[in-house]
Image (cartoon, rainbow, N blue to C red; front, side, top):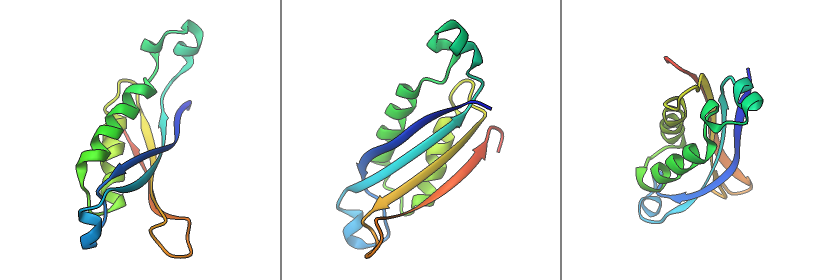
Length: 118
């Protein structure tokens, strides 16, 4: 299956369980893979036959900036639903990370895979 990739989308938002995390926006790093049949888009050079990554990115940014989730797992689920709501999307892999959230680690996060109809 073909896939569309959005790599290292950096968004600021409220995420976390600590008091300071509930009031201070922090960096959230998002990686997305959307499985879809991209053959017709490649043959016709027509965006209407693809998943529009700009549309996906705008929706993910708007949601991440306002969702105020407690966990990266919940935000990843939200983003997977956004991806799978796109016409032609059959599956999505979403990774959500909080850079610098854990001492001695460059990032912490969660990665999920979901299919249309899950």
